[in-house]
Each structure stands twice: as C-alpha cells, then as structure tokens.
Length: 469
Image 1 (tube, one colour):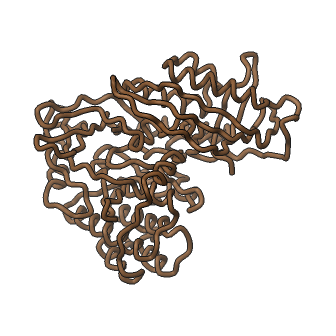
Image 2 (cartoon, one colour; image 1 turned 180 degrees about the horizontal axis):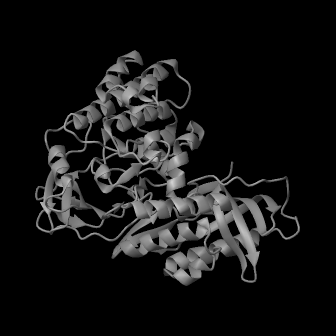
C-alpha cells in the first residue's frame, strides 16, 4: 500500500481475516528500536493504531504488524470540505493529545504528527497512525516539524506537542481566539516552555463540546485525493557525512534558485506553511516517503498481498498522473507579466499536448529514456518523473490508456530559456493494475497547472510544474 523509508508497506490479513498492515524496519536484535517497539505494544488507546506483533525476520530486520485503520486522512478531509468546526477541533485536540500522552508516558515519541498521519474513522474519531516513523530516522513533515528539528535536534515529546499545536491551528483554517488560547502554549519557541500533550488535550473543553469529525461522501473525498500534490515526510541523514552532503546540496539549490533539497525544505517548512498552501499529503497508516528499497514481506504471520488502491497511494502513486505532473513541494517564484499565446517563441496548445503525450507514453511503456527526453536534465521535473517511474517499476504497476489533455492555454510568458505557461489539464479515465488485477482510475476534472518549459533542439521540455496561483 506504499513505501516507508525502510521498504514496502503491505496490506494483509491475519488468520481470522482481519485487515492489518505489515511494515519492515531495519533493527538489530539488541537495537534500542526493539525496546521502543515493545513499549508501543504495551496497552491500547482508542486514538492510536494498535501494534499487534513484532516478528524477527533476520539479524537486521523485523516486521511490525499493526491494525489497519480504515478511513481518510485528516489532510484529505480538510482538503475536501475545508476547516473543522469548533466541536470537531475539540475532538481532534482531545483525541490526538491524549494519544500522544499515552505514548510519552511509555517513553515513545511519535516524531511526525501531521494531517497525513491522522485517520478519521467512520465514527468521526481521529486516530494517530505511523507509530514507527520516529524509529526510521524521520525528521517530520515540513510545516509541522518543530523549529528545533531544523537545527538537527532529535525528536522529543516537546516536539510532538509543538506539532499538535500546529495541527490544531492548521485544522482551524485561520484566526480563532479559542484555538489560539489552546495552541499558543504548545507553539512556544523553547521546548522546555511547552506543556505536556495531556495538558493540551485537557484544553479541548475551552474550544467547544466535542463532536465527531464529519467525513464527506466518497466522491468528494476522491476528488480531494486527486488534487493532492504535496511533499513527503523528510528523513534525517543517517550520518554526519550525509548531513553535510545534503546541506551542501541545499545551498547549491538555493544559489541556483531551484527547489530546495530536503535540508533546506526542513529549515523553511514552518515559515512556508499557511492554511492557504496547506500540506494535504493524504495517506493512511502507510508511511509515504521516498522509496529506499523493496521490502520482503514476512511469511507465516499474515497472508500478505499487494494493495494498489488508488486512494492509498498518494505519494507512492498519485491518484492521477496529472497530480504527479503538478509537483508543488516548494513554490518556485516566477516573475510573470501579462502575455498571450501569440508571444514570440511561446508554445501553443498543440506543443504542450505533444509534450504531455510523450510523457504519458513513456510512463505507460515504462521507458526511462523516453521519459527523460521530456524534461530538462537536473530539473525538478526530471526528479519527480524519475521517482514516479521508479515507484511504478518497483511495485509492478502498469498504466493502461493514460492520457492527459491540455484543454485551454490561459497564459504564456516567454523566458530566456523558453516559456512559462498556465494551462488547464484534463486527465481522461484509464486503468492501473498490478499483475492480473486492474482498477479504473476515473477522469480528473480540469485544473490549472503552471508549467516552466525550456526549448532546445529536441523541442519543448519540462523544467518544473506546480498549480496555478
């Protein structure tokens, strides 16, 4: 159902036919990770995904089997219907806050409290998932990672509290005096000045009486998932050498004006995040980070199967490939002036259609050379396309009948290397499958994408893409 930092995350069933999730962690027998996993298995909580079993695979790996929590993420719910009501905000902070308190009292830090890691159950109950994320050396989600994480500080209980305050503020969608009174102390700059998670949870009554969080109809949720185009959780470098290399890459990106690397993104995430540009990364208990390598599913514990539902592969395989095209991890500011499709050297609608047709065909054929020919080497678009094709290949996923059509050219402005165009994209229905299984992907309604294009001997190529302002 997705990829974690340490490999594939699988949907499975136990002997009784109950749905579970199986993920694989790199953990030696005497690793501190095993102690934390044992702590996670102690007791249950209504707002936490329960870890059922930890199975040793070999000397360096273990499989973690946990309950599968059905339902959309908070990110998807908010993207579909907007801010939460006061009673829902009270339920959110009470449920997630008490869940964090349960973890902290057992010496466990979550490390990535964010909208994509909160599932809303059918009863409207928020459930915190991805409990093994902190064990994978993650450094949180941009916009929800506390400021001390950007300085290299390890995840801590106080950091979870800061993320809880930010989650509450984000779900409120704007200024609210009652929310500010609860979230404010959690957002203190110094970790030692923040209250405990249970203290924050106890403030729920000051917002309103708790009410279940309303989940929109499935069709509305599906449309919200299609619009998702957000960055993955960041992972902390495994060594100081890797950290220095990553930081240097981030500085080079900054100097070129390109999209920052993970280090730069982590430094700027909190300042960049606003309710209007909310990070609505949507996926359930499967962690949705950059794939490291394919995992081997455990045998004898659960009957595993590949699970390729479009709604749960937002970062592994976005619900639409047009969604993968419009990558908005970090907005790149482009100075635009009013222009038309008649500007000298500007691409017309047919030129954009030809470029997208070549891109779609390369994805269907799984042809990395053809896909590379649609982007500028070293560009943001090249990285995004390469990652998508790698994920398709790693999961054995095929696309049939993929066609992304530009239906209107809204604006086109020449640049020194090509042009920046605002174009309305419509993705036609197609099929996605793994093995013999095929699932329809519905048509995606038109949406505006801003494409940064460069022109050369080979024609137009993509440099970057993002939603139109």
